[in-house]
Length: 208
Image (cartoon, rainbow, N blue to C red; front, top):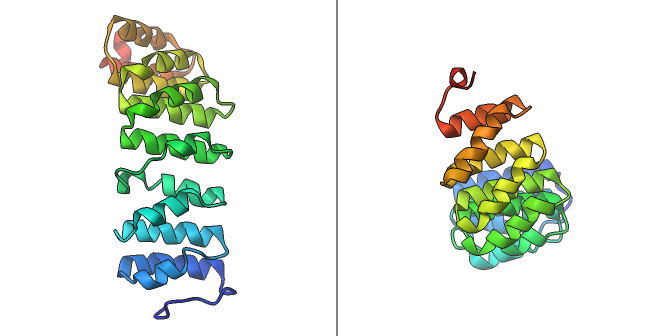
């Protein structure tokens, strides 16, 4: 584990572990040697270790967000809370839906109000429900009025998206918001009903 480089034929699991341990131990040389590994799993582990160790440079992050493998791009988006100031919005248009989902989370964590229009489009029309759900959550996290209509519209989506929309509405105020939340008290999905009760601050017994 003391070497700064690994044989390309070393097992992927061993190199991923090496990246993680080197990150915790502050051995930046080992972590950096694995940033360009042939395995995307190793590259993802290396960038995660570098960020968690506080050693990532802007160029490291840009390369990871542009990595040819979606696993690396997704892993980098999931590090959003450790990467303030990073622009994740280009990945909202990624070809891989798992990256779009993670990018929406990242944008929500960064509070980028300028991304609300694109998030609203994803919330309303993306074919993957997980992407729609993540976009709705991001709009709630940002809390900008530009996302209000999209969150309200999401109340007509699939149950998981409706639940997320109900929670997101906690970031908005107004008679229309309270009215639609009260409508959700009779939603056919019990988790949506429960979420509406929580946001409204009432107990289930008060709705019966």
